[in-house]
Image (tube, rainbow, N blue to C red):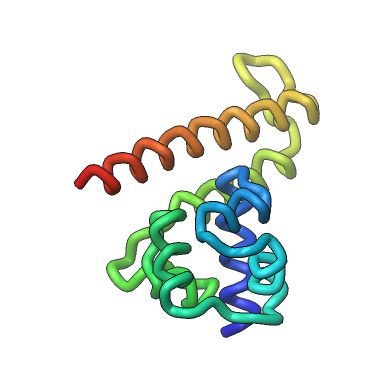
Length: 132
């Protein structure tokens, strides 16, 4: 469970465009604790686990679950789809946009733009949850 949990935390944090310090601030813990979680050297307590789920908008099942599965309802996390898209975008040969071949810089710009939109959507979602 440690490596799966740590890997998921790191993946979600990076997909959110957050540093370990930023995540630590959201959770009310130290950046070194976040680093230890990600490395599998320490596991979060139940309260921190709940906060992680809230920050990233995922279930506990997803966070600690099998990397090959989604949550128990068969839903897929945006982070998983984004990872697959990013991998394909960076590896796809002959990729074009409006008939013009994409170079490495173009691909990076697309990925960064998606990260910005995802971060904004996450902030709006979190704000809506905090109000309700």
